[in-house]
Image (cartoon, rainbow, N blue to C red; front, side, top):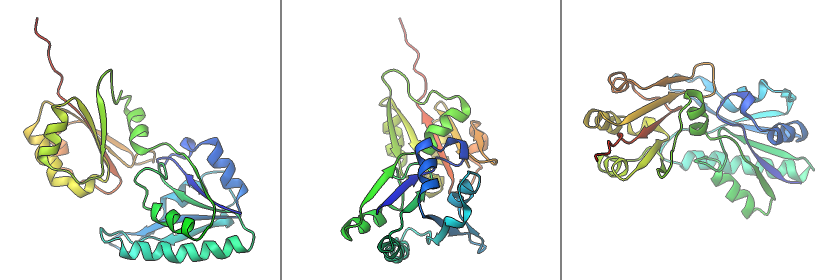
Amino acid sequence: MKVISISLGPGNPELITVKALKALQEVDVIYCPGTKSKEGTFKSYSRDIILSLPVEASKIRVFHVPMSKDRTFANRAYDELCLEIAARIAEGKTVAVTAEGDSGFYSSGNYMFEKLASMHIPTSVIAGVPAFIAAGAVSGLHIVKQEEKLIVLPGKTTLEELHELTTTNHVIVIMKLSQCTDTVHEFIRQHPDAEYHYYQNVGTANEQHETDRNALVEIEFPYFSLMIIRPAKRISVG
């Protein structure tokens, strides 16, 4: 028996792969991460996606992942889950652990799969659609063209880094945008000629796409948001 890491895509249930759906239908137990808001409301986007699919809801188990830059509490939650998963495997169950987007792309669950591997529990991964790929499709954006280079940043950046990248033919994707709100606001003010595509809640009924610079510098970016920055167009002379 083994554990399958199942990527669910960015939020729209129709963007899950056929392979992932088949696995969800076949496993015995499905674990979905959930978080609590500042107001104390518990939410699991993974569970919401699965409930919209032809999958038996009684197989779903939600586990709480504390949201903090200090990963101590999150890792403790994963340690506890690994022990529970090990018990399920010992019972002969097949287990799935879900992740939004792609489970190998800035997924907080990677720590858990390293832990399971150290416990000699076999694991496998099913790929999914990352949020920034879905975002480009939502707006009809050709994310990278010809000789352009793409770089993905995890929400920790500086004005100097953004400037350097946009002046060296890089298209920038910023994930976890809420972690660098002030930096991005200031960069937009200093570089009005660049092209900005802001996305929020991609793949859900509440998805948003905004390109107006004046509006963007007023937005307090939430957790489920990202931005694609394309460098200013260069005009050829001669």
